[in-house]
Length: 226
Length: 399
Ligand SMILES: Nc1ncnc2c1ncn2[C@@H]1O[C@H](COP(=O)(O)OP(=O)(O)OP(=O)(O)O)[C@@H](O)[C@H]1O
Ligand SMILES: [Mg+2]
Image: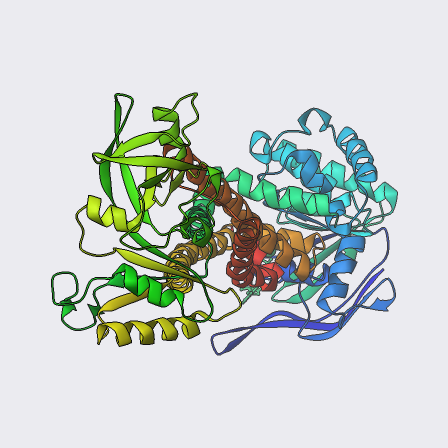
């Protein structure tokens, strides 16, 4: 469960203050499927970065699973990211010199999980995502869709409670984009909270809850009961 | 994070840019190789010279005619200075602390025996020669007579001369012609081999007085005084100097003590070692700058990756260690490369020129490698800290 209370984020550019987020109040329950839409510069990525503890609010409080994570130390935030949060990016962000399997393994390496268990978990995921044949390929030997699937495998290998995807289909053609989206939606069955930032209204409409942002504020927050 | 994973991650990054890593490591390698090579040769030389000197014992002071003036050059040899005489040697023999005194001249002459001839080095020495220089007579003895004009025509053979002229035959008691005069063989020296480039086996030893006459020399070339090992060299030098001035009326001779010679040698080698260290230091500094540059580039190139690592939950410290590890790995491998190159060249030189002694002390090798690692650490700290302190969001945006 996620709760933002009066969260603002502003940047200082030169001697000007740019407000990226203004007084956001938001609650997301565990297992929700949420899309965030809005024009460029409306603060979607900033919101996602805050949710992912990559960034800190200028003011306000962030509660994650009941605990206040706003004022955690860098070290503690890193641990929360490691254990509870998965990221999927528009540009995949795979490490070019590591193989697909090693990329998936990376979060577990950082977490200090034993090699045998890592191997097993990677194998299962690669199998599930249809990547087994590509395990030893490097990112530049993979198609865009395959890369994003590797990235999703990497984001879920630590079994996070929240998955944050910033325009995950932005660099993919339509068909591949849909495939990737299906994969993400499949994670909902495991009870993950899925937050997808997108420009694509059709994709955004698939979420059970749609948040529209404008100028750093939430303009609308609609639930579909389908 | 497991150590093995840490190693895999750091090696993977510099394996991808092999050539670049190799060249960076080479900077360190050249510095280490230079230091190892030159210290190997320096150490080898040091030990070689020390061994050569000390096999005669170190408590010897030698007196040569002529004074090397600090201003005005050497007036001794051709000037008015007096020759060193056998009487001088006798006078020194009566000084306290003196164990033995050896008057000495050297030259070349022809030996003849049974129709065979051989040209060798003639050492004109005193009766205490073997004792003073801790050399051993294999059979027979040195002449017992006092060192004076009455010395009898006795000769002691070097082992090679004995081989050449008396193969399979007992030379003791035989008569041998040295420069046309008849000498009786009374001893054979133990083989000594080459010392400071002179073959002591291809030589014969005769009384100094006889050698002076034979070689037509008016005086001795040198007097060696062996003194008690428990007495300081300076004390004996003072006594000798006083006695010689008393006899000659002024200081027209030069004293050289083994101890001093070794000290001078030691300080020369120290200067050499220092110069080598400075040279190696400069190339290591260049290597360090290379590592700093490469690591700074690596951080810039891999900024997005650093952002990703942070997003995946890497702690600042982990990022720091990954980059620091890479810098250290570069320099450590460069160091090992340098060690191999340095030792390789040193041994290669030794194979090519067997006379050139080489010796790589283990301690130096270990110190060199530690230096390399320290350099990597020092050069890697700044870039690694920069990497660790990058803002994750901004880093992720770098592409
Ligand atoms: N590091 C920063 N420094 C200064 N201003 C920033 C920074 N990051 C974001 N902003 C500003 O904050 C606002 C929101 O940016 P954000 O990246 O969240 O937009 P977005 O909704 O994700 O846009 P897009 O759809 O183009 O990705 C923009 O006006 C942007 O210029
Ligand atoms: Mg954005």
